[in-house]
Length: 461
Image (cartoon, rainbow, N blue to C red):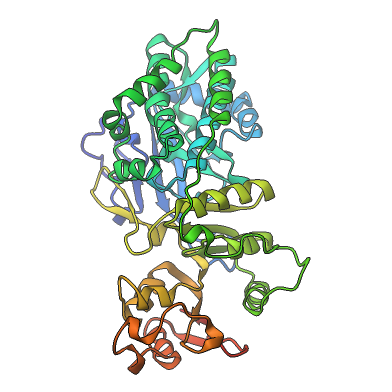
């Protein structure tokens, strides 16, 4: 391996950090002088896994390596992990760094622009709580970048850069307070003001400072809140955590937020419609470790998959739907990562070193992808896709299995569109045409037996 240009503190045997070598720096950690975070494509950790995903590492050099290594040996990092605020790690052997850790679980990589307001709130509360715990020990963080916050079971936010823990100094304390104000409180305040869509537009290029520059008055209010006016840093961080938790976040009434029934129980306390029952049967047959729910809306199937034991990623472009699902996952302590994402134009996380990017299709890759009740919207309304276009998009998001649905014009299908909505489609918009398109991208496509109306299709790569 060769040393990466512009990274003078790295040892000579360190990776050049190109995707070709399977490693690159992550979360803006190329800006840190003492520790770095990187991702590495990895083989499946469990027999039967079809999604390799990424392993997540952080490493430290020099005095920082000695400090973090001591915190590890003394059990401080383990103690912080037990609070649920710091992600659980293990020592990484064979790293080019003097001391390195690896996350015990493969994280779901989200861009901050994909967070809903509830996620910003959970992250702010968790980060202020972590800083309070560290302050009690005479410690702080050198950097608090949101990209290194992951959402685990129940939507709990955990920070995953333990190698950024350092001793408290006046300069580092001032810097971390400003980062918390600019990178967490300002976005949270904008969500509280109903400007979450604007916030996502500002963050889409990965510039964490953009919201503060666009809304200087909001940023100034956040910075004033983070001033150390109390006797101890611990007190102010705990106060800020409480204030962040108490902020009320509005949920806009949208067309999609009332499109599906929200009160259908995931537990079998009443009869389910056929499709819900069929999906439950397929989940029980495949037993996927991971599930991706595209255009999840209410997230009923995401919650069902999580209750069956899968780790679930659920995405939708409607923030109200995602915020409700975030709350439902928290209430049910479910392993559901809910993200605001448009499947037509998904975000890619930038790689600051080599200029390559990590697409949403790769970040969210799962053993089973659900694409239910969406294909007719993709074809019979904007963006007016063909079946081949739809099959291409669904194949990009599918690592192994795809469960999708064809909605005909038959009365039993309850299709909100009619043939005249797309003139000429009655010549090709049919079940056989959709199956043929899927077979050009998948090795096998099976029609799931069921009553007339909407038809479920299970495809396998």
